[in-house]
Image (cartoon, rainbow, N blue to C red; front, side, top):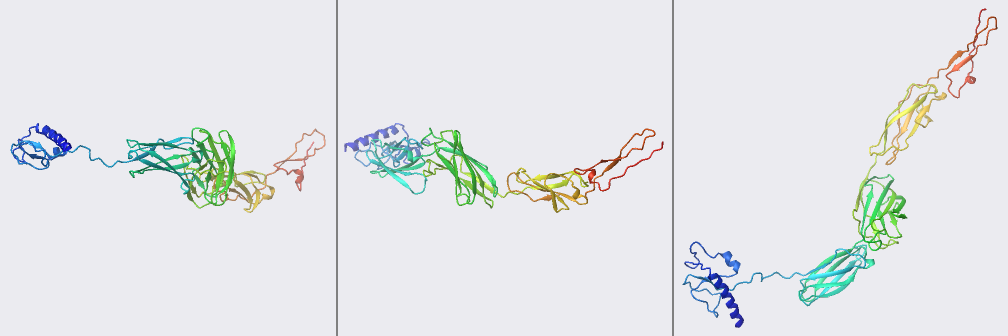
Length: 466
């Protein structure tokens, strides 16, 4: 009864505070002077009001109404403590870092647990390759203090945890409350690659560069990585270089399913250093898209890993159809050639994919059939006299699909003979002397032709009168 009386006295004191406001009313439910105690005010104080002319009896029911007599308002219902109806307690669990390195302590803390209860901490460790179902479970415990807080610092990240993800679940063995969190021990690295587009059927050099992160040359540093290409890709000429030297590169499954280039092995790549792997890849068609996912390893035997994709990756690759180059406007600089003349062919090179010209090939054809030359220029031979000549070019690209189709110039006119000029020798004769012998001189021989090849040499003679 004493507790009830104390509570009643508190209520009466609060009611007296309202009474001091001297809010008059005329009748129950009516307002005086245009002013009344609104429902919102009543709700704020958590009470009901009725009319009464005398002090309430402490032993009476405080919820009962009284007949209004004096016209003065008093509180006769108990006051509700603001915020006393709080929501259910929510338990939390967290770690002091989202990611850890080998040797670091995982500090687990939580709030909202039943004071004094044991909180079971279950850590499920998933080492690389993450998601393969091969996990380990670690069980720890923590005791909640008087405020419901817990803390545990028993788990130390191991070297073999690199690349692992951890799922932490907390269970209050008394309260039944639960909470969860996650953390990782990620291998820190980033990567780039080129090119982003490649033509199928065209050998192309790919370059992948991995840059190591972490705090030192151990722990989370990069050791090596591999890149898988589309099935059927032929991989050749792999290389691997790092900032401080050259490492080993290799290819597996070339031309088969999951063809792969690997680079690394040996010492770790220290933070800030890079490992660059190159390989010549001939990707089969048809046109498609592919995603490169560089995979890092933390061992020299390609068993510890692979780890998650690097920062900057995965990388998309567009595999497109490459078109061969085209030669057009093929021509001969002189379409009325003569024996011994130097002719030059010309053409326009074009490649729709922008592939630069490589070593295009040429042919000179006699009567469009017999090949008589393979260079951009051609010296007309004696055998060509009376025959036509055609210049042909086959365009070759430096990269991409190649060669293109052969293209020819228009045929020349029939090759004409060369002009040979014969000049008689000139002499000065002394009066009375015998007449000199006149000999022919020649201009216009085409090497190796000379006067010895003339079937009937010209005869030169003269007379003079003394």
